[in-house]
Image (cartoon, rainbow, N blue to C red; front, side):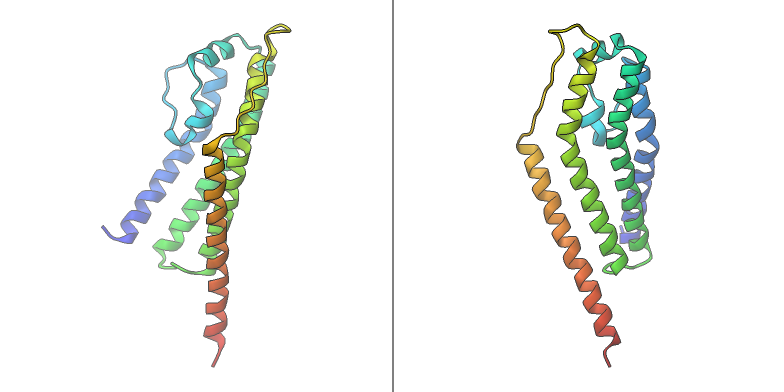
Length: 181
């Protein structure tokens, strides 16, 4: 398979995930317990265990609306990342492997995913409050977690930001070199 074939495959996978991201958000909160499968890349946010589904079933609609709003931030970051990936793949299909455009897109992607990883513990904490708020006093809870996976992801996306910055600087040096006689 050629690079263009891989690029086309990644582009169509990204379009499919993009298409599935918004319905997955609404299905969880509007029709909890419905029969659907969550896309793997969203399982961190959209794959509640059975106790969360029963909590969502008993929640009033205003609380469900707040749940949608909180998770919409994560979905927005995912959608932005997928659109950026589609842009990167488009540049690869045009043969622009180390252009300044690709460097900028990689930098945007790394910043977006870094924000996504930072938002994950905040999302979990807010979801724990929202899903238990409708219960009486003494039954509400706040769960804050920040573990090794989050730390590993932060380091990974920091490394990706450094690589993207180096690619951008390399593209600038190449442009200057091309202008030198």
